[in-house]
Length: 263
Image (cartoon, rainbow, N blue to C red; front, side, top):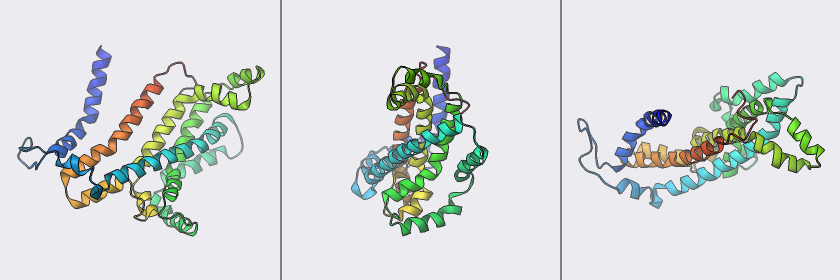
């Protein structure tokens, strides 16, 4: 009981900064020294469903880009994480440092070169181009998380499955993935949230033709409509909260081993 109360208190403190946003989204003017708004309205929430605000377009494109980025980062991160976590080879430390570079170096330093290449490939201003550029920060996080998971992984389970006649696909699907599932969920959560909230890379590579929810939010901020901006901001965090809820449920499975390693 005490643990549940403590958890609720922590959640309440974490979500306290969002309370003014929620009030602003229903307020019809809220000015100092008013403690609370004097008038309430649903106009801001009705406005986010209007085509003119582009919230629906931004929401759909953000969801598509974040999902594709997460899936592609997982495809690259699984074998790369296994190699870094289980194998010893020359230059392993240098590869880890190379993976950290997109996190350490500012995206502005590399954007010009990336933009030039995407223009030559005809991918500038396309969703595919934005997905590819989102892989820059998502693949390092995914690979480093999974390499930590594989570092604590016992390959004896796979050997036993193979000795019983399991095919490589069966070993991967029925043995390896269930054992490393907590790490996969954590890596996917990181990748999805990074891609979902990415603004700078989308702004440059999207060239104004790819319109994600962070760009809608930025445009609304420039417009000065605080109530509408608050409603869009709350809308932008809902998918991340839902993804976090499902991830928490998956991580609650104590039967899975391989765990989170030293993440």
